[in-house]
Length: 292
Image (cartoon, rainbow, N blue to C red; front, side, top):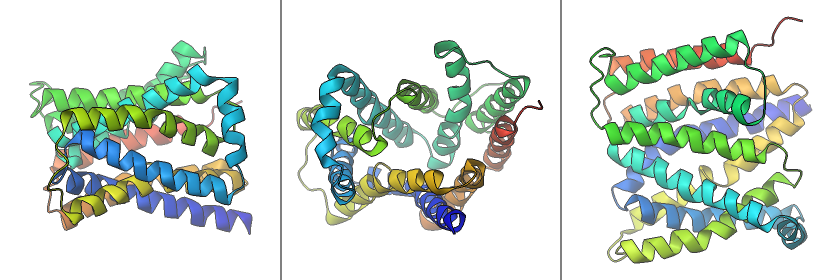
């Protein structure tokens, strides 16, 4: 019963995450990346407060922060502030069908960074996964011209790759955090909110944003940065074997490409699918357990 519920939670999270690349591009037609960060962060913070309140955990907020205030400030500055600012700008500069698969390689980046910062051993299959993954990234970014290395937007590709470093770094910093994950995430959003709002007020003009923009950014705040994370946590917690849930994530980028093509009419270059398949194969290889 628990496994069935876990898979339901996991599928719900994966399907919602599959929609966010489309939601990003729609939102960016009405807002710049800094406005998008600020508005989505407000929505996400409110949703996480509601979730923590529903779970009866809000009383943990002040005591958790008091134990490690600078640590949670650093986490909040990485995610959501810098990470989503970089990610949204990458989506602003690139077609979503390029930005999304490149960002999806963050799990391979995490393995390499964990070896450097946590002293974890890199297995043979991790090197194979990294090789396949980053060849896939180059194929996607160059649209198959891997030897010419010509990019439509070198800055956009660079920011998409930087987002993988930031996201992997965030999880490495979280690796030994014993606090409740919802409270830890909420603290990061609360502490980063003054920075994102102040930056948006300084750089952006909030006049004239239509209701469609507010609706789109609310969707991003709820289902990319907020509630979906809680669904995924519940799925992993309930599953008898984490692999039953974690393997679901491999369907997300393919659904995302279908939605980008059908909803906003984005043309999917054939090499994007080739590169994405290589990334996914690399991730599957990476997840396989080593023989004893």
